[in-house]
Length: 171
Image (cartoon, rainbow, N blue to C red):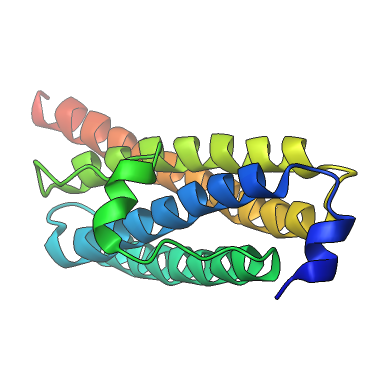
């Protein structure tokens, strides 16, 4: 499997598979973080945030599938044991301490920023050396950047609402 894919890559394929397996583990943790957040979230903008978290969970699952496919194309094996996800991941899953919208959105914002760093690193590693992995990473990077923007927008909206409420309740 993946003989030509391995031969045409101009990066150390074993290192690349290791990095992709870390990203694969992170995608499953991100999926779970969004999935669980959508179930637990409470407070302002809840319906909008549930919808967004569910969409992001689906996309993180799609990312995991794409990364797994690429690992296999390169002759590797995706992480087989979910217990290893947390051990491999540099972008960690943070269990929800608070179920309020602001806390969960902030938690996901931090995770998205880590994911952006991960995929920018893979793009840097593979640019001009492994076109297929580069395209895959570029695609995922674009979606992670969109996720970051959406989480930032929610935080701005919640901060604006909080400030408005405080200004009207003191008058």
